[in-house]
Image 1 (cartoon, helix red, strand yellow):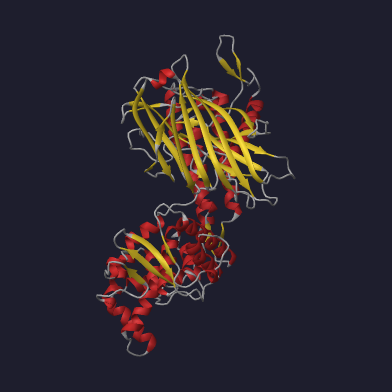
Image 2 (cartoon, rainbow, N blue to C red; image 1 turned 90 degrees about the horizontal axis):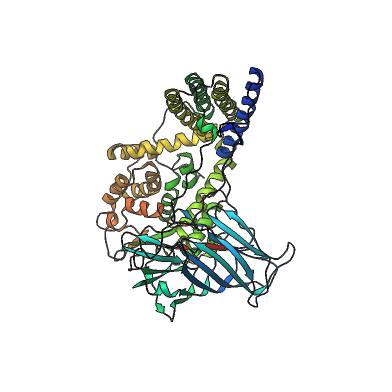
Length: 640
């Protein structure tokens, strides 16, 4: 839960009400000056939030390249005098760092809230295994509290290091309507660790009155987020214990204990924050109208500035892909980023760089390496990462016949797709095919934003008209205004085609026209270009090379049907299906594209603005319907 709020200072009036900091009878000029200054400061604050979004922290070097030998958590759950649950947690983390100078210590990210309410997280102490205090600091980190345990700058830790963290929380239980009971549903280590775990264990100690309220339902879950794999939860003298070994990165243990409904008093509803002064002041219609005019000018200016170059030439049907331009770069020019990975995989396949695999029984896709020669730098890195899962390697490191299956819970395909899209975007700019919109458009947007903010504030101060109807009308108009301003700002920031990019874009549109032609017209065009009859093999080669582009244009189903007519009852050599299905059944492109584009991506960092956050299921887990990562607590950790 975010706690920071913008505050506008007030002073108490004689009648006890809050009055603003503005003096009672300033001159009109002083009023306007004050209003303009406030508007400018506020507008630049908003612009900074829009144009400079919080950048996620990126781990420096290889600070996350270490292991967690063991992670043990002791939980003591009691009920306070108000009937609310109170939890004391002692975590004993044994990290194994490399013997060379890499790490200063560990950062433990603890969720601060549970199911929308604050848990009043308090870190009491951090020590080593002998009880010797370790220096630590805490700071908000999105929805988490980052506990940084590190030696001073210039020093490093090596080998096995013990971190014992004690902290308390409140309101850690919840009544789940689907199970009809109160539950303590908790994640142990959390799903946001990039390190493997040698072992994970937990003990839960309950106060006597809570033991008597247990229903007997209890479950344990293991694995990555969403995994329903169960683990053994053993009853102890005053609670429960659970343990697991050899867990990979982002794998977690969760448990859920059921208590009779009403055992705990639920957390109180959060109190709504008080309204700010700027939410209460009336915004006049004429100010809204002036803002509307300013926004319209902004929109038109940004639209004109953001328009890319055009060749002015007629689009001519093309049957050959552009020379020396990858399909990933083409996807950038066509603004089809989500289809980049699908088109690239098909491009590798029809060029016989790899073979697409389909396991009919499990409906799982995979790839087999064939020939890695003839790939450009970006393609080579993408090819290698698809098989090895490692960044920075090249295709030469992949042995022929290497097989890689796209597991549904693996982030290998998603991470490779994200990296490919990033590299292709950089290549588009590097080759001068696209460039950012003119900075003048952005300056115009900023100037008009200041004007749009200043007019309502000035009018409110001078006339102090607080009619409810006026407020409602003005708010409605200004809401529309800000939507238009936002659209104009986005248009102004969009990349646009250069003359070179426009030529390439026309060529790609020519491919689209060729794909849309009737079969007879396509054959006639090929014969006209070659001056002779075109044999079936030549047609198949051309049609195969256009398949990745058909995906970019959204014609994959139709184009696959055209290819299937030539393959007849067989499948091409770049596709293998374990069930012996024909081409269209072995590789249904619509389903294949959906599978590729929805591949999960590794979440390696959080944003300090709160874009990263914890997840807690709104469904109970004590009766077996839960999953790993569905409880409160958990979180993650990082090296430093």
